Length: 318
Image (cartoon, rainbow, N blue to C red; front, side, top):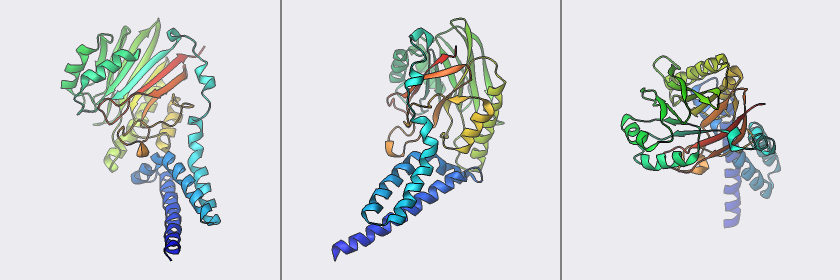
């Protein structure tokens, strides 16, 4: 009796679970029609994993028709993930020496992070050529700057989003780039990397909760795409975008800007939240102009922030 009751409950939960995950997936596909739907687009990895588990459970329960529905859901979920899990062999063969590789470190330090000494130690050991830091408060800047002797050149935008770019290389120019009226402002450094002018743009786009903030974020993406498309030399754009590659807004921005994602081929690791991996998503990105190839992309350790550092090694195309 108990076993039959347990089977009935398990059957119902498996069927309801499959329907629920399908609804979440479909909502994400409609993200450009309403801002709440776009929030569902960011969990493609979790949907794929849940569909696999549900399909296996439904097969054991001999609910083959529903199992097929779960398998189809897995297929739909996994399609945009495939470019990120492709072989790394081609990319890793691009640069053979450290001198040919430009290393960019991007990290949302979190405005409440009290341990700037730990952050500075990690940056100093990173061997990065440029560092993008976000959510820096004035007190954090005062604590951090003296602890980064390797990076004497920097530009910090004083707006509330706190974008900053540090570098060890000589600076050609520096500026703040407004991305929306009353919204995010990017920090841009043009530096001289071994005789090549390289632009590094640090961005922190709005958190897309609510119609106003979501509209800000989308406007900032459009401005970022237009700015990037207008650049003629090597450009690196890095920071906290507050959206994942699975959002239509992200793919549209890449198409409009001509940039490509440095993470392609290097896995599905999550950058936020750092405290709870099962719901983790990648909202921190490094985007490259056509001049660059990605050599590797990886995440760093937890450093007192709700984000993990992102490290991208890139090389100029020959």
